[in-house]
Amino acid sequence: MNAQIHVPSLLSRAGAVSALALAAVGGPMLAPGGVSEAQAAPAHATKALNIAASKKGAPYKYGAAGPSRFDCSGLTLYSYKKAGKSLPRTAQQQYNKTRHISASGRQKGDLVFFHRGSNVYHVGIYAGNNKIWHSPKSGSVVKLDKIWSKSVWYGRVR
Image (tube, rainbow, N blue to C red):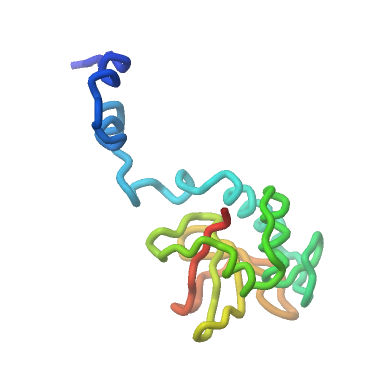
């Protein structure tokens, strides 16, 4: 059976019906957490993630913020700047500026902050599947790695 719904009349009768109820009538229900990371990520976050990935293999250099060498916060700064958003220079300053989110609420393009106690010492860009793009240390290059620690916080660039 192919039932058709007249959307304008449905909306006029909707009153206080929630957007989730309307989504259930018009198509698949998009419950919180039910949207894939790629669908949920803001456009600037997706762009920043793609820019970071495009720097794969770029050498680490302390204090460098691109375009061909990066330290960890230099990569996130560069990627978000190219995506139209500004961030401060250091990982700790970037953490202080982002909207803090839970691990269950993380999305592709969010920043992943590694910490010891209350001190942030490293940052990368969440790529999904528990992985980040980052510029890890001297002698290494920009690469995709699995998140190796449980001592991480997540931040969303606004």
